[in-house]
Length: 492
Image 1 (cartoon, rainbow, N blue to C red):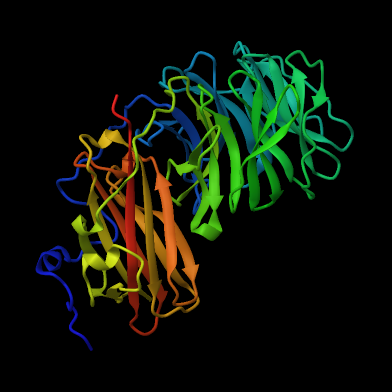
Image 2: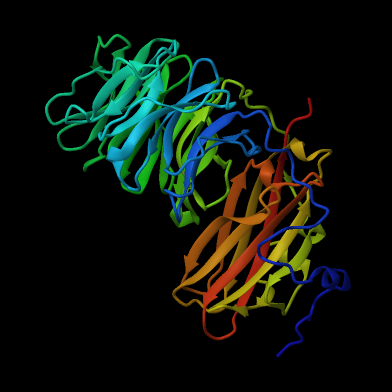
């Protein structure tokens, strides 16, 4: 067997000290920002392993800073919407696990200045609230009349009444009320369960069908979760073709012309526009590309690719709301590819065999090799790569694009390749990419994020590439390529 450190330069050998796969990072690394930074987004999310016990409405900036929450109680919240006053919010909470009939409408505040108020109290489904343009009325979905339909009540919960009566066999819901035009868009499911979008005036007149649901067939497929642009001229929505396939579309409210904006290899769902209409925030899941669970992402309104705001697979996004304080999308400088030979490489798990940072520069089959170590009933090997971003300040980072190519030497069923990014705020590694592998060929892992939560004030970015195999013979993780591309904000 070759010497474990064959090919390893002395400087790199000193850096290749064991480093834990989880837990705290360097003692000198300081997180950016604090809990009380002014929020720009509200998002309802729930832990995928325990969605009822661990659910919250979080307050974050567009670059994932902040840690405050609203209405931290047992039960997942969804469909949070902010009042015209910019502080009061309305949302639905599922009080009993996996029981839609237990969903009720609540009102709270971002700053905690008023106690939470429950607007509906019954044994029917009450869901998907939104505010009228003046904030005096709440429009919501209810099945108290026997079928899902749109209802409204005063902001205090008084004077409930049915807003629209759907045709026999149809169901209405997922409404959004435009403050600029006083029009309401909602999703109507016909008797077959196929959804299309409809428009109506705020007083209930002028009902018209806007979309036809596309080619979707099957219950709960078609056009879902519509959201008006700030001027009311366009609506972003999710066109669902199956349980795990949905694309992001726009429809022009004047002409009814439907345009595909983004077709993921997976789901694009629950969109919301930025106040300046320069981008759309939405939930994105692409399991076949190693990015499962619906995570918060954003997309320039006109063209370009999405980026992840939350590169963390522990939480499933339920809904998003964008606050008026969100600034316009800034300009960026030219992307900069970082030199991996200047990164600090550490062994996260296992023992090094053939190791040189030069092996990580390009995909050329000259591989950085690490033997697995036994952990529980698994064989695990991994490397940490710590980059220092060439920026005057950490906040000058607009986004980072991360790519790695790796394989394992034993492709048994149950083997996994994983790429994580260190989160100094929460002192943990967040899994950004995870993909089962049942072969020994090289796989490319990628993700792009704008999250400053995963960068330190020292401008350090740490990523981990892991091979995680079932019990068996000692194996190898072979990393052929690690690439980090920095996109800075433009100098003002």
